[in-house]
Amino acid sequence: MRGADILARTLSRAGVKHVFSLSGNHVMSVYDAAIDADLDIVHVRHEAAAVHMADAWGRLTGEPGVALVTGGPGHANGVGALYTALASESPMLLLSGHAPLRELGKGSFQEMRQADMAAPVVKAAFTARSVDSLGEEVARAWRHATFGRPGPVHLSLPVDVLEAKAGEAALPAAEAFEVRSIPLGAAAAQAVAAELARAERPLLLAGPALATGRGRGARSRLEQACGMPVVCMESPRGANDPALGAFAALLARADLVVLLGKRLDFTLRFGQSPALDAGCRIVLLDPDPEALRAAGYALGDPARIALAVLADPFEAAARLAGTAGVVPAEWADEVRAALARRPAGWTSLASAREGALHPAEVGRAVQARIDRAREAVLVADGGEFGQWAQACVSAPTRLINGPGGSIGSAVPFAIAAKLARPQATVIAMLGDGAFGFHMAEYDTAVRARLPFVGVVGNDQCWNAEHQIQLRAYGASRARGCELLPTRYDRVVAALGGHGEHVTSGAELEPALERAAAATQPACVNVMIGRLAAPAVHA
Ligand SMILES: Cc1ncc(C[n+]2csc(CCOP(=O)(O)OP(=O)(O)O)c2C)c(N)n1
Ligand SMILES: [Mg+2]
Image (cartoon, rainbow, N blue to C red; front, side, top):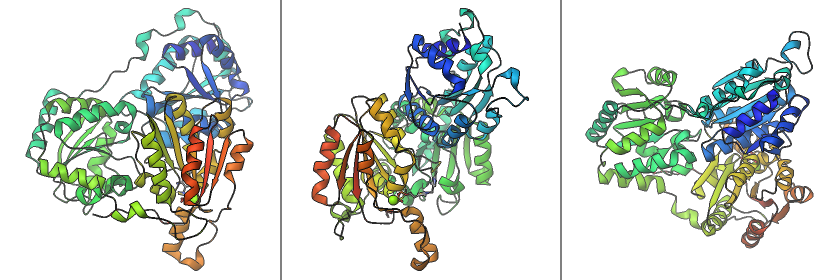
């Protein structure tokens, strides 16, 4: 076998069926090997899209998504998108072709220190050293991506390693993909349960890992045990994420906060008052000692740390579900009510302007469509429109940009979601700015026959930044953030998809219906007003 065969068969042994990829000289042997290893290649139009797809796959399935790109510029194009996967704690692999080891230092074609370039945006980055160790190196990358706090791992694949020969013995055994967890010990679980029992107003906060498909089961068991929601925080807006309703006011009143793999970072204002009460005690459960250290440093006052324990968020949630008791019912009701709170006026919000809809109108129509679907995935992306989407629309499965706060990933996310959940209605709501990043991926969706519905909130603007200009510098200096009333629906139609253009409320529902029924990927291009993101107050 060539190294390329070992790689492809190792992935296949790990259970990989699809690889998100953009071709290149360095990896064509892997394309060849993929045929015999029965790996499907989703061939994209930009390497960053392949990384976003692997990210979405990781979040939805809990198994690492795999992106395969070529060396040098292909790798460089992909690296930027790892930022989002790292912040969202998404297990995935970026596999990049690489100049041959025998030519390093001589000026090889596309020679670059690829692992160094990826290092700041991954859990680990390394370069395969030999064909004999390649299988084990891939398995190690696989384990590392899911171990502890999940995240992206990079492995560079030198051409001469991919082309060298080795025997069957170089293939890793099935056990090589088993990931050991960091359990929450019984004594520690009892101690957390005791803290919870003592508290009057406790809160359970989860990081992005528990918001994924893999986290859902453990989370809901813990919710049942405590009689209270586990609050997933996966927005850079922290407690002010409009999807969390009026949660910020409640957080400020808590007397105990249990962080299940949730970082005590800027999203929690480092635990300081007034975001948290100055007397609020903190339980830190985290698989990463560095995160425990940073939390202690951010908090400043060791007396506020009730407990700090090294544990997987998944394991911790599962174990606590068996030990923790029910929290005071009145408080639990308050938590539920705060999360559900939306201003009463929202149900009737409508645009006052001819030819432009209110984002909340769009949200209501999408919610109605999602409610009629047997299974649905919601993707939200962009600035102010993305915030409206998150505030107005909910779905059993949701993918957002995450704490990294990067825009532009929605189209690749939606494509990967349709591949992971073929039966689901996949709807991506995204701003016109965000749409521009990866609109060429509609071509990928057409070729791969992965229909989804992209709903573009077209305000002809990078509105989130325009709103900053209005607030900080005044209307007369709000310049340079305009876009055009572009017919993105026609762009999608030109790529072989289905396009709808919506300029009035009456057109919206029928257009969404046709888009959802289309056999091709669809774009519903909705002209909207330039509204600031919503804020929900207590
Ligand atoms: C990769 C990246 N680049 C830039 C930004 C800054 N940014 C945040 S929101 C936004 C505007 C997005 O415009 P659009 O998608 O049209 O949404 P709108 O705010 O107009 O509703 C920009 C430029 C970012 N968050 N991520
Ligand atoms: Mg916009």
